[in-house]
Structures are given as C-alpha cells and as structure tokens.
Length: 149
Length: 149
Image (cartoon, rainbow over all chains, first blue to last red; front, top):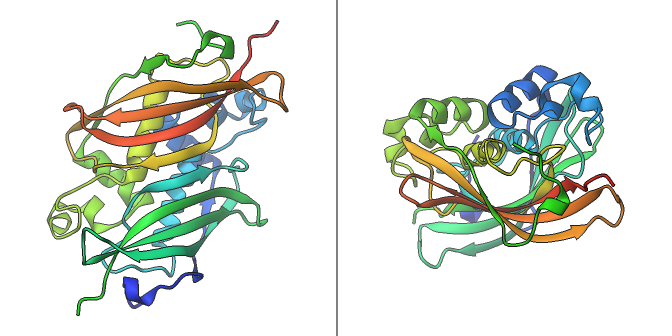
C-alpha cells in the first residue's frame, strides 16, 4: 500500500482497521503487568466490582487501538506519531470475546508553524466491538510528513 | 495501608508512587504487540526517525502510569476506576533507562448525581523520569466510593 503524506489527506476522510480479539487471557496478561486490579484479573472477584464481570483495563483498550491504527489503511509516511490526545473516553468496558475494530476520521489539518516538513492532523478514533458498541473515543493529534517537493 | 474513601480526599492533596524502569527490552516487547513501528522496535532505524533514537510508545508510558497509580499511596477503596481522561500529553519521549515515577494531584471533587454511593474526583497525573523531566500529563476522572454510613 502506498504511504500517505499530509497532502494526500483531507478533512472528512475516514479510514478503517483490521480486527483484534480481546480474550480473557490477553485481558489478564496486560493487567498483570500494567493494571493489576481484581476486576481485570479474576472473573469471580470481578463480579463483586463496579464492572460486574471481567473487564479489560481501559489502557489495554487504548493500547489495542494503537495496534489497530497500525493495522489500518491509514499508512502514513514516517509512521503514526502523536503528541497526545485531547480526549480519551471509555463509554463501556471491553469484555472477553469482544472483537475490536477502529474507525479513524480526519477532523482538522494545518501545516506546522515550527517545522515546515510536517503537518498537524487532528483525528477522531472510534474503537468498537462486533456489535457496533463504542468502547473508546479519542482525538489524537498526529504529526504527518509533508510530501517532499 | 488503609483504603481511602471519597470523604478521605480533598482538593490540593498529592500522592506519590514507586518507580518503574523502562528498559530497551520492555520498550520493544510492548511495541511488538501494541505499536509495532521501527522507532519503538529497533535502535538503528529509530535514529533516522522523528525520535532520533529508540523511544517508548506513548501508550506504553500511559500503561506504566496506570501501574504506578496502583503502586502509589492513593489506595482507593474499590480500586482505581476511571471513565477516561480530559487530556493526555507526552511532552517528550520516554527513553531506555528512564526510571518513571508518578505524582497524583486532586483537582476537583463532587458527589455523583446518579450514583449516591460514588464520588467523582478529577485528578492530574504527572509522570516524570529520574531527571525530573515530564514524560506524560493526564487528567483522568475517577469514580471513588463514598464511605458507607
């Protein structure tokens, strides 16, 4: 697939990803290292928590969303590099068996003032499961290479 | 350590964490699964990237920040549960050898309107390295149990 430069993008475009299955094993393995709390590690204890059942760490959903961005048709020259996100929300927990996919929408674009080789691209990422339920919304700003002249 | 309820917190309090070392191995292992891009996986290729050297995925820094929250003196009854963050920024990349630590500040508090057993607590998390350089700033909102009466 051809790599995309700033000049290849426009506001309103959308891009889509492959899928990633969140198994109970993956949920527990991530949690053991990064978010070791009972509701991410153990089905029985999770039942008595606010989640009422095993749930992935929100940061796991965020990490998988990054993976889906790499496995999407938005192939940026120089890679997908962000300096952060203006918003990051988990409207509902990711559960074992959820199959995640990502939609990327281009919201705003402008050339970088300080770095003439880069453009600043605001995006909205919507991570959903196989039932179309939204699991995460974020609005990262990407630094995208301008096409060399 | 005693678990803390909403009533034990107040605006302006700060809490602190243990530390977590970001080795090149950990950076590459996280990236292989969640952010497989050359500048997170390979020193030589990273030199030619915007990062000019191996750098952790920002989502790795975010995941470790969650881990440091668990390894902090903010031990919340019912656990650390958030619905997202209003902001998430990486002012500079996390590098191999960086030793991360976290400061948690309580910014705002209010009882939940819809769930009388919970309080809504806005926080600011500042993740720094051993030189005091800021690697991540976020402002997650936590759902904190109210003390049973």
